[in-house]
Image (cartoon, rainbow, N blue to C red; front, top):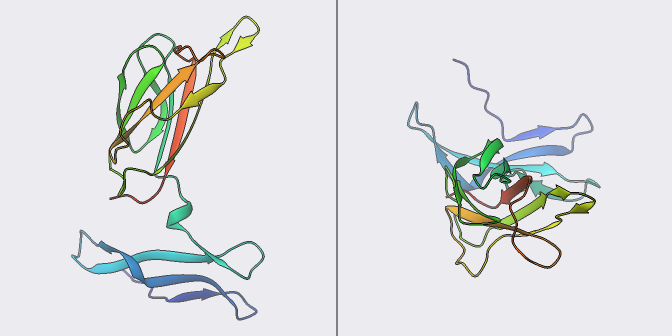
Length: 160
């Protein structure tokens, strides 16, 4: 097996387009037992700043149906299971936990009934934030909980 060892990837005009940082997050190669850095900085829009590639990636995403009362996965990444916690309430449990409980979760839901559509969702309902899961609570315009035809969420932050 060959190794490609680089610190910077440069544009043809000589400016750094991508830097592989040796500080920050450290990962261990499970095959060889080597320790290596895993932080990659990329030149951002406008070219005068950089952004951390890992920080911009979704660490969890979930798409599910909940209209039958039982959460059913449609498409997932880093989700180990769903739990039905009652009408309009689903617990999304992660395969790999986040490093902090107060990570960013974005969610949405919809349910069509005649011309009305369910349009709002919240992350938690008086529950403590947790590194290993988040809740999705869906409801109608009157804030009455209701199972949704489609629910989806995406989590951002650092994995533990």
